[in-house]
Length: 329
Image (cartoon, rainbow, N blue to C red; front, side, top):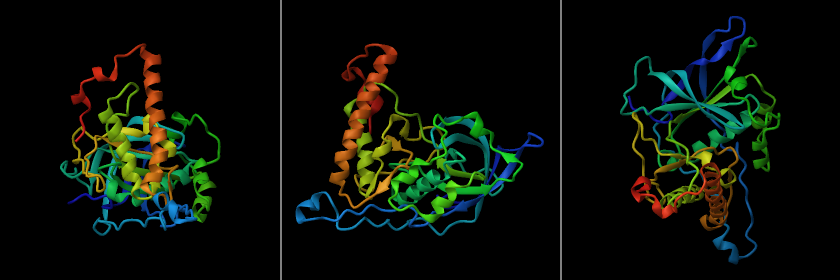
């Protein structure tokens, strides 16, 4: 069967939920969620006069129509694999022993996958991120990871998620800062902030390594900045989260799907952007967005050069690096 981003209706995950009475892991069946179209409130700024035409659009860009087939009825089954990383809102693991409709999937159509597990007090943040993956469907596989769905299950009173306590957040306060990104908070989001009994996850294509500290040639810098240019064409900003930890290499380990050219720049990128919980959508033009992401990206590249210098001492000038190591197409 063809495996599209909307093929899976339910997802059984092993190795994540524990029965507190027996300390045994129990499989849980998560069901696909759909983020309401109005979950994220768009920012509209009126144009006071025609001179603002280069900075502000007359309206917020509409979501491009989906090019996916009708939603599928497939079920995915997998086991929690290796720990990959965590942040203030989620914990990420690889998925192993993947089965699709009860059998091993065709490796030509199903890539390596990860599961992004929301922390118990960051459910609203994951819901926002799910909304942005839907909003940026046309960039999946080129600029951002392919997202195979947002899934949830309500935990029983005698169940717990060890990953939450084994990988605690550095800032474990109760408040979900993602709510500050919306001038009007959706009622569903307010309800989610009061829940602590939901296992909420995103299933994503597994990407490569994070952007490493150190000097990088202009080809790499330009390719990464071009990612944010792609996103800005949809009226979306991800500038608040421009950090090297959120920039990963395109997939290169098998099984994997081919990288797609950007629908806007026609470039085939060597990198991907992740983490959109702090994103926002507005009626800014790409030029206005560029003023923001250029500054944040320049600061990031400066920081990671200083980080490498602090860790390793003096390093060779960037021209000493082989361009072939960083070649983009």
